[in-house]
Structures are given as structure tokens and as C-alpha cells.
Length: 545
Image 1: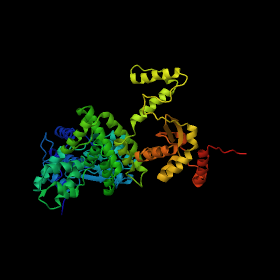
Image 2: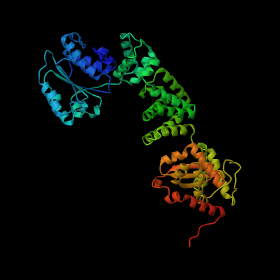
Image 3: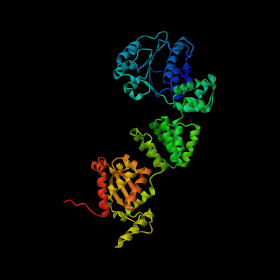
Image 4: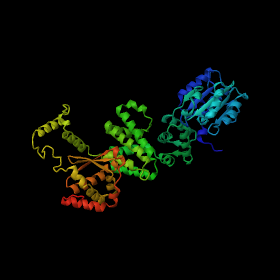
């Protein structure tokens, strides 16, 4: 009968366990001194040796030839052989997932525990996935668990310790199993490959160990799949037939494009992942984890121990290049952008890659910060309150404020300033701007109809120094208008309609959440816009009698 590798090579001695040294040392000391307890609780992720350790402990307790002062079972006596073959009457393994009720606990555990062990020293109950028991079942088990019959040992195993009642945890000796490191898994796989007489490269072992994510059982299962290809020498090309390329490879490649400011390649990679069916929510989480690892490395190389990500030597080398090229402030900006985009993946079912594409453009082609800073300074200059707040630490701003005071002393300030050539010469009042707003929307529809509809739910908040501030109720609308392509179209049409260059800024205003496009304008937009355009052209106004 065919046997999977993880069953064929299941550890038969404590020394064969992979990792979990803190648990091995404690259990072996208890066995050597004969000071073991009546109830154990093994908790931790799947596939890291909880059930295997429980069977080893049960075998050592009942071994007929175990030497005094030794922990390892002989693995040769009748008791050890029966346990290895799974036919021992003194080892009761119960799957709590299929025996959740109180009746099963009473029949299979409580009543059975009262029967003395047959030809062995101890009767051992191994209850796997114990968190699946119902509350009434836990309550029924409590008394027996606290004061079991003589020569009875309980070993509870769970992957979700938070679901186990504290009353149960307090009655057990708890052991927390941890994920196994890449190096330990690689050494384990190498031993199996030698026994199977299959030649396998160290790089391949590293790939399998990384893909297993700390689970020894998963690593051995993947190795078995690769062996099933029937080759006596395993190469990286063969591994790709069984194990898809790691998301971490794709994440590093994606970050390299961002570092090189290659927006086209980054967007192409994202769309290729869509075609391959990659889980985007998992992908963006990996991006956030890798960015966190880079930030920790930037602060100090010693902080890398707090990152849960393990990379192979090649990826670690590529990551080091990114660490050297990107500053912490830039990394923090990237991290904030991806954290903002992660929730949007839930609502972008039609174009799932859209949030990532927006993130790419915000990182590689961000809005012109220089223009925004100049507009902020201009706002400060125009405000009477800020004219008197001189800051010695910022000489540039102090000079601007001083010049403003000088201008205020004059009765007729100059219309233009030669020292600030970036300011537009022409100006427009916000009242005049609002009169031609519908004309602008009509012309914008010729370029992009959906963009015009988006701007209909906006509100003109301010127009100062030819910087137009638009308010939106939701970030989705702001992000759409703020895309570079759409922003260029809006500013182009604004210049065509108002004959002066205008720069747009977008803000979020909660009071605009209920604003919708006026229905009458949508239905009769052509008529109203044409009439308004005629009034604006000839300088007339509508008079109601």
C-alpha cells in the first residue's frame, strides 16, 4: 500500500523531531525524572509535530524496555510496535471535530478512562482539534481532566488555542509549538531525499522549505509530489511544475519596478497576475509585509528578527538593493498608500487591479508637490492673520511675509510680481467661475463623459491664485479625478473655457456625502447649458418677473 512521505518518515524518537527544541528538552527531562503530569495541551499551527509528539510521549510512557533515567522509547517492544502500527488498545486517539457532543465525551473518554490499561502502564487519550468540542462537552470533561483515574494521561492538541476555555487550559501543562525554520526543514528534506536515493539541489530544498511556510508536513507532502514525477534528479524547472512561483518573488519584482519608477512594467505585472488568477488581497498583504521588513532593515539590521518573513539568499540580495536605494520617508509614503488601497480591493470586483494601478501612479507619478507647496504659501500670504507670524527658522517664508507687509503699505499694489514668474498673470473671480461651470462640464463631456458626471457631484470650495479647490464626499471620486490622465484633461478643458491656466486640488468633505448630480441638469443639460453659455457670452442675466 502506497504511503505518503510524512507518514513513512514520521519521527520515532524525540531526537528525530524537527525544531521544537524547547518542548523536546522539557518532555525528555520529565520522562528521565519520572515527573510528568496527567494532562498536556499542545497548541500551535498545523503540520509542525503536535500529534507526532503526543504519540512519542505515549510510546515513551508505555515502553516496556525504556531504561531508567532515559527518555527515548526502545521502539522494539510489543507496546512500541502496537503504537507504531496504530493498534494499541491503551492509546485512544479521538478527533474532536467529529465527536463534538457531550454524549461522545461521556462514552469515549469518561467511561473509557475508568477501564484499566491492558498490558501497559498508562492509558493515554490523545484528543486532536480539542477546540471543536462543544461547551457542554468541555464542562463534562473538566472533572475527569482535573482528577483522572490512576494511570490515565490526557494529551490535548489544538490549532486554535483561543477557542479552548480557560478552565481547561488551567488544568493542563501547556506547550506552544512554533513554525519550523527554513534551515531545519531543508535539512529534514535532504535526509529524506538521500533515503529515497533522489538527487536534489540545495536551491530546490530551499524553495520547498519557503513554500511550506514553517509546516514540516506540508514540506514533505510537496517533496512527495515532486518525487512522483519519476525523476532521479530534481531541478528548479521540475519544481515549478508542482510549486507555483512564490508571491514574494513577484513582490520583490514589483518593488523593483517602483524603485526604478517604471510605471509601465509595474502595471503590466499587475495585469499579468490578474490573468494568472493571483489572490490580490494576499498579494498586497505581502507587499505591506515586505515594506515593513525593509523599514526595519533601514532602521537597524538587528530589527530583522521581528519580521516573520523568511527569504532565500537570492531574494535577500535583491531586497538589500532596494534597502540601499529607497529612503525611510519614501517607504512610509508607499506603506500608507498600500494601506489605503487594501480595503478598496473588496469593492473593486469588476476591475480588481484598479486600486493597485492607482497606487502605482500615486507612487511613481505623484501630484506636483511643488505646486501644492506654492499654493499653500500663497494662501498663507493672502491671509491677514498669517502676515504677522514670522518664523526665523524659515528665512524663505520670512522674506515672503516681509514683502507682503511692504505691499500692504502701498495704496495700489502691483498686479504682477517679477520675482514670482510661476504665478498666472490673469485672475478670475469665483463668482464668474461658477457662472460658466455648466459650460465647462458640457465641454468636458466631449473628452470624457464619465469624468464630467464625477465632477457633477463635486463642490467648488475655493479659487485663489488660480488654484481651484474641489470638494468630494467620497475618496473614490477624489482618486478618480486625481489620476494624472484625468487631472490633465480637466485642467486642459478649464484653460479652454476660462482662457487661463488653472490648477486643481481635491479635498474630502463629509457634508458632501449626500450630494448627487441634479436630475434636471442630467435630463435637460443641453438646453440649460446652451442658454447659460449665451448669457455668459453676451454678458446678460436672467430676470424673473
